[in-house]
Image (cartoon, one colour):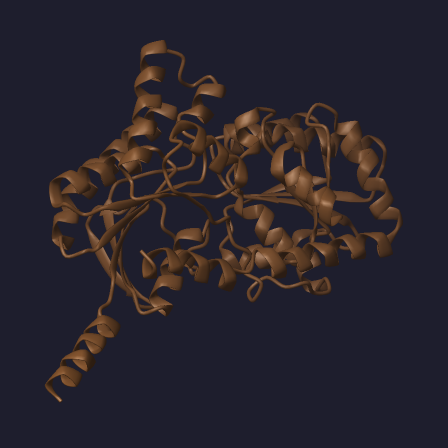
Length: 410
């Protein structure tokens, strides 16, 4: 009897034990705010599995703030950041986040594990410091390859600084329990840097419940001034890496050819004012900037959208990413247009749900879009294929469950 009692007690203890995960992400957003929501999806998936989740993030207010959101305990540190910041001002914000996070993490020494989300790479520095100071192991997520991205973009040129940052990257990977990569290309790059490190691949997610294929609503078309137009939208950061001057050139080419096409660029960032100047100088009447949109407003833009644009500068490292706009477009059942190579181009071709256009030739963009404008049935087929891809491979529920398994099976 006593032995049976102890067996039952041990089983109860095992089942009732709850893992506590401390998530570090400088740019953690909730659905009500908008912006990239991957870290919220991950936190939510853990909560649904009974995991205790604490998030350390930032906001642009002067004081520390704490909220409880859907079972997620979120702590906002007063470290300012803006998408319009230049490179060095961004770095300053990143380092402030590291310093403040490490100090504040002392309040959560009972955490079982840290989950550190990049970019930037410096979040991994905070995770390493926490590991050394508070003896909490960490997992590290890689959404973009740093420092390779700023090196290829020309922001980091000093050979010694490059050497130090590449060594830091390797050290962060090797000090982690495991690394989570958002694409196959990123996984391969990490495995090349740290061949013996365990790497999970968990891409960005398609919220197939929130974004759905639907008929265009006349009142929304009227609001954006696109009634009866073939609409191409870009939704995301307006940064240097995104090369959005390409969309302005495409709009110019479409206007010259008198095509019934309209371009919506939605978001904010360093390039916003430059893009507006380009549009004004070229006297274009088929393209507009909407500014930052919350999640509900993004859904309205997707309602009137025919094709979602994924745009980057023509650099190899930028082909490796896993951009939110790609997955939102798939979930909403939209034709996807990319101007980069890499895994997205291959996937769109394989599943017949999008096209890849030349980043150097706006004429190629117009040429490849014309058949979809002329053939609504072909467009609808590609759009349905996009939705199918989202449901089968990128469902938020499926990928959330896969992510939660990392912690329940460790």
